[in-house]
Image 1: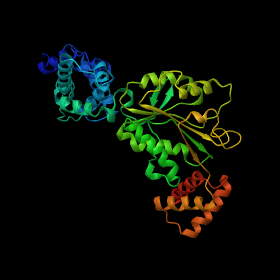
Image 2: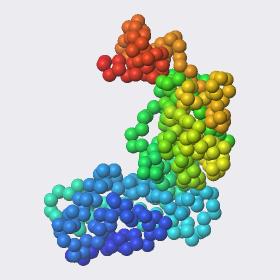
Image 3: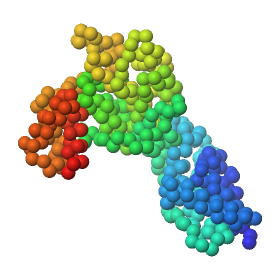
Length: 385
């Protein structure tokens, strides 16, 4: 049987890719490409390639068109970088991109029966879905909002950590949003306003959130990222031992159209600490220029960071943060109010008197009247209903 002419043309045209060439080596595309050249292929190999392709696709999506378009949108290439920097792109390159999008669209619209005809197997084979997406129109519409969507490794997920000296996505981040948080409205609003300035491209401050444990400092930062992810906000968490990597991370994101919070949690230092020196130099701008699309947000306890020993003036490191926000431990009345608000939010079926009694007992057992204790109590009660 001769080769299917349509599949042969698609296979040949894929070799002409220049801008999106990296997609040819993607683990889902590789077995699909192998199937396009079915001539003289052993039937057992044909079947294995088909099922390998389906297995890899199903792990990510059941719609081939939508999945390939997602790969295009997340691809980090010289064209999208130029667009993100606001550069004038040569007409020849624009024409090249348009042609390649048309080629990839043809690949993404291959229907199951077209490949099944080429596989010498008469049993039931799994299938996939396709869509009528216009890759050219949709891709350029996305480029017009590139500051919202981004590209490359930071396009899909809101939060990242450093692993093996590179940012990797947090696949299952804490889903908390600003609507889930109660109390500290004034303190939180200062951080929200600063973050919104960053998103608007306005000057934004590096922020130190300090105060007692369990007051929601870290939750505030995570909630900001989840709430403003759709506006192009991302978080890269950097542990204390990783702080010497700050200049490299800033260089990596320098031209990215997205906005970044470089987040370090539970900050503590000694004067001789190398990490202290790197962070201090970065905040002062003496290591490398701080990207306009990034800010440093740090949290620390009052006893470790925030004020000098006299309790009145900023210490040498905290003074280098343009915005310092103190989250004080709530008193009993504020704690009980947190419990009541969280109980309503969780729709708990517990009468008010019983709830207050349990709240008092839990605070005594967990170390005090904190927002963290209130949250933990409500989670326990919700799980028990």
